[in-house]
Amino acid sequence: MPDRTVVAFITIDCLYTECFFTRLGIMRNGRQVRNT
Image 1: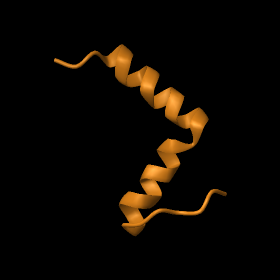
Image 2: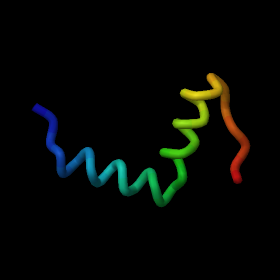
Image 3: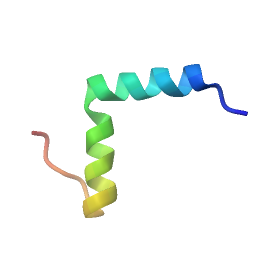
Image 4: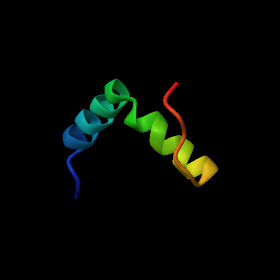
């Protein structure tokens, strides 16, 4: 089973690197979104 600590750490790191929002944009639009 995956460690929630690791997942949480990656999620927080992604929030700071804005990669989380970028992935959401890719998943929603199906293509890369420009940095805003």
